[in-house]
Image (cartoon, rainbow, N blue to C red; front, side, top):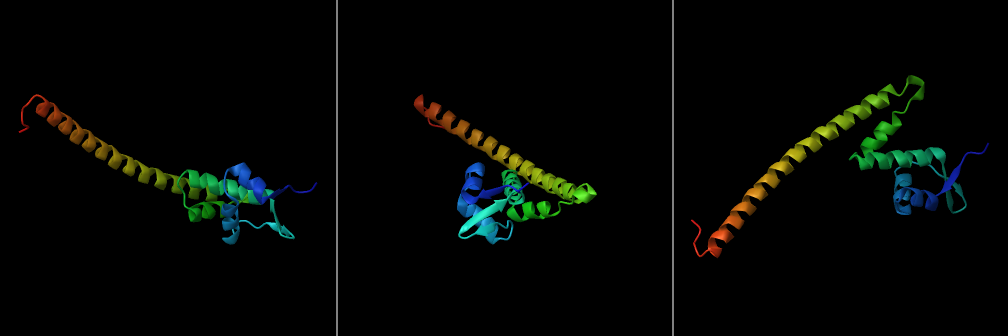
Length: 132
């Protein structure tokens, strides 16, 4: 049974990315298409790598972080190293996002306070009083 092959345009359409993005991954040595003249033919393994890179991107991983985790794939040893690495990366990302969320919540509360003071000032001036 022949292995599935995909053209660059098929993969770009499937994942909603540009062909330039796929060529970038190729330039970085992350995927290795076969060549048929000028045409690139990507394997099922290339397709999976692109899918995993994009999944990593969606959860805030850098390209380097994604590749490091993907390269740890070791089915002979239950992928324990890969899974531990991914858990560590996810925990780190989660902690950073929670800190950022806390900072955003504080900024929003400050904005609410300033807006309320401004609205209060407008009400006061509307009634002909000067704000103190």
